[in-house]
Amino acid sequence: MIKRLLKWIGLTIASLALIAAGLGAYLYSQIPRPIGDRPTLQAELFHKPASQLPVEQRFLYASAAGLSAMIRNKQAKSRDIVQAHINHIKNTNYRTNAFVWLFENEALEAADRADEKVARGEPTGLLHGVPVSVKEEFWVKGKPCTWNSEMFQGFKAPRNAEVVDALVEQGAIILGTTNVPKLLSDLQTFGEIYPTASNPFDHNRTPGGSTGGGAASVAAGMAPVALGGDMGGSIRVPAAFNGLYGLKTTEGAIGGDTSEFPGQAGNPKYRRMMVQGPLARTIDDIDLAWNALMAKWPERQPRMLKPKAKLQDYSVAYFDEWTFRDDEMFIGHEVKARLTSLAAALESKHATVRRAQPPAFEEMMLMHRMLSIYLMFDKVPWLIRQFMVREYKKADTHRFQFAEVFERMSDLDPEKYDDLLRRRKLLADGLETFFAAHDLLIMPVTPGPAIAHNPDHEAIMLDGKQINYWDYFYYPLCFNVTGHPALTIPMGLNRDGLPLALQIVGPLYSERRLIEFARMIEPLHEGFVRPPVH
Image (cartoon, rainbow, N blue to C red; front, side, top):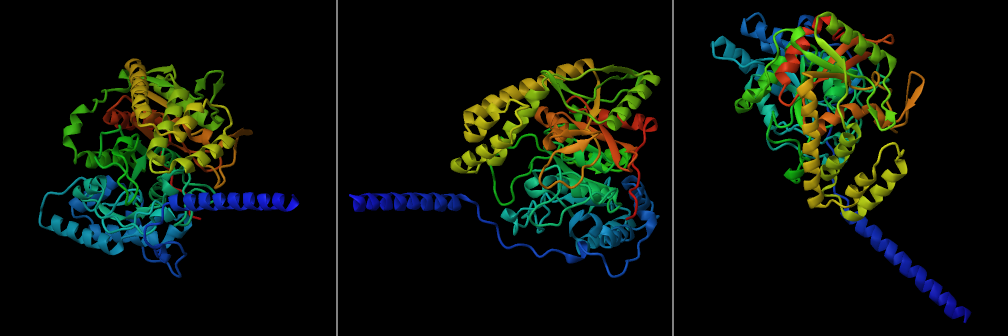
């Protein structure tokens, strides 16, 4: 009897072991294999040079508009300007790890061609001969595009992204590509391929994400303009953390080949909320870069709303802490103070200013999660998604009603996606109704300044209050859900020498209005301040 029992137990254990081994083998087989081999990094970008290269300082921190005028008027050569920025990158990039690839030879050759074109008296583009940085999200032909992930470690772009072509067609010189978080999926910038990016104002803090490297490159004087992408604050948060202007464009206004995973086509139906836009130190450079991008799609320009002639013609809404149900999103006192001060300054200029918030904050935030799930998990096997749901539920603080989010993660039902798009349209329509009563909305980007490096996503302390990591970044993503444009505006430095910022949101296709309004209010607030030299 005992022998039979032991035999049965042994067979049971062996069967369970086989099942576990089979399940493990299945799961292993479902994990995507990395593309190619790990790239060899350009070591000079990430280590302090033995000696400093010479840099013509007058070109650093000059505006893109100013540099373009100097080149056109033969007051400076593009090659000298580009060389100065390349040398500055080599001298200082190790401090922030802003650039991850430097295209030195290609950039200098392009600068020479730009100078030759000026010498021949040929027509020039809006950014002719001006150096720019490009987020590593976007394809640059023949160059690595890893998204800072081992999954795509060996991928090289077969062509330029359309937005990259748009800049090149207007004469821009691509210096290189800038740092991003793994799979572009964080509001900090760290991952598996490149060293962690740091904030030029405080190297113990993040420059934000996912255009963190791009923002750091502009704030640190390595480029006057950066091309960024924004699916949930990825232009506006880095712009805020680095004291820059950053424009999230209306969804569909720019580009035609929105980002896709390197080497994978993906389902185009699920590519929603992703937009492109510029980051710069001045509003004039935002205007210049935006017009350079829009030049590739002239048929879309007539949809743009016209700005109003004077500040007193504007009706502006503003708010700080967004309330929902019996809760509200906490905003730090320094950001509140800048917002209140700007509202008062607008009133003094006879603009109509009202405290008002749009509806449906929680609904927009949850919709962002669900649309993102279809985009990011489309190719993730069902069984692996069940494990992911389990982990997400463990981390749920129960502040928001995530039941439907977990359901969509578990079951990517295509028919349910169509329903999400219908509900998304209702949210966008609701915000358009809000803008029928208010020309623009001014509000925070984040509750406070750039946070300390936080790879484990631990709670953030601000003004003595503990804030859940993701709660720090919920405000920007609402407007990716509705597709509305938004512009980060720098508000100077706080008492610790860190940038503060606000964002201006407008109706669909109101980029021109946002830019002109930001230009009008420049005298009413502090702007970009150079970071200290560490």
